[in-house]
Image 1 (cartoon, helix red, strand yellow):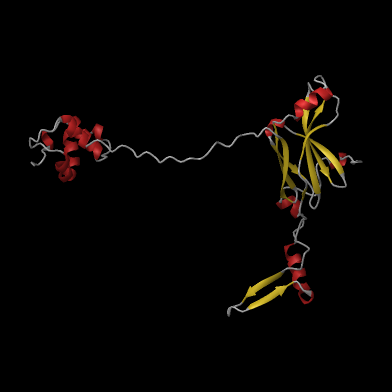
Image 2: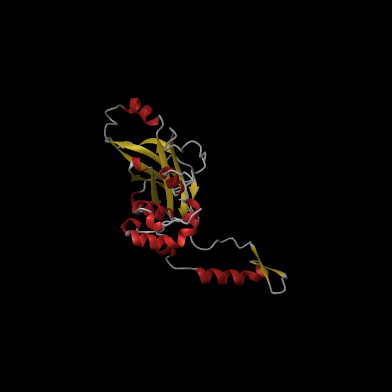
Length: 255
């Protein structure tokens, strides 16, 4: 096999070989610059391109410098796509923190169509979506929402039990429930009042000691509570307060 003489190759052929070696800006290089850039690859070029009269056609020679086809990724069966809706009328409440609830809902079930004959199409021609927030032992309040939004955050008080209904309020003002949520209770603010837990402390000799809120350790629990008590922690750190917006207009639930 003879050594390839790059000077005898035409510029398009040199550009093709330069592409195989990923030489940048090869289309802008002159022939002499291409030759200079390819000289360090000459041993490998000799292996791939033979001019010794072996009968290789131009197409066969070009194929030797063609880039390898990209590898096809393996097939991954991800199953059926997750549907956007499940054809239900459902509202769910999650506790975010002592002063906030996250409410999300789906209104794709038959309830709204069943309500129309009872109330009359005319009564339901114009209506607003409302979340009715029930506070156990204190009544309820209505929060206007966008029905198509599918979720909402509610500012609530700590250490209370809540249930949420979603429904519509027609022009006559009567609330028409569509779905009712689960019952949730927000945690209290500050440190837990439960001092029955015992904590394990391991010293340098790996001896286990018990440090708990027993009678003789009550001073330690009081010190912790005083150290971590933050005035106004509800409004400053958790984005809310124990005052529920609109609570002045909260109506008692006589049921």
